[in-house]
Image 1 (cartoon, one colour):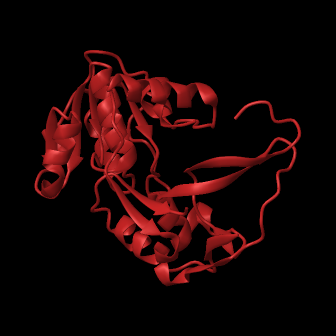
Image 2 (cartoon, rainbow, N blue to C red):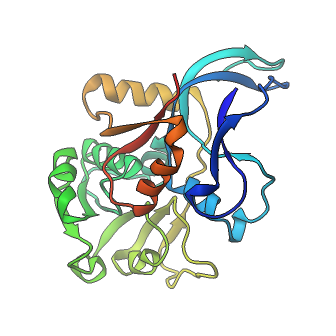
Length: 260
């Protein structure tokens, strides 16, 4: 099969388009003919290495979400997920609550804005000036330009923070929460970071792959409660350029490899 192979830690030049062995379905597994796959921030972090990403074998195939057609099923498979976990299951967001969503123009955060608004929450998000109209169109009630304004002093008394940015942003997230608030994260804080408050919850979604969450997402799409994000398509052979755009963190929606 054709694949983008990470041949070592470093910059986008470490990605090479080439051949890899065809996979087979072990017990409890399926093989999927992938038609499209997304580019996530976690991909360039793995590529750069360091921390938890420093001990992977090479060549390595990056990626974590995709769409396609199941082509082979291993033994013990009885059924075959997604991102609703952070807002509904982990944060337990309720109507009337206030949520701050970091990095609102991104694919996961953009879906989070729509879902939070559908649930009846007051939605605040951070975005660069060029993305303000986009995130307001997704349902954000208030947008903070993180290049101009410090969200940690501009916002207070939030019930929930959904941090999709991580890094140095994490410390400020704790400052905007009310006592008893919930911080849900999918992007890690700096190495060695310790939560500065004990009166709030720090939660990470245990995202698994299951049918009920996919069906819930389809129902939300059918009801018009959410819509797919803006999608920028790349050829699989152009993985290096897609990584450069992802790493710049100035994008709307999702970057997607059109595989077939």
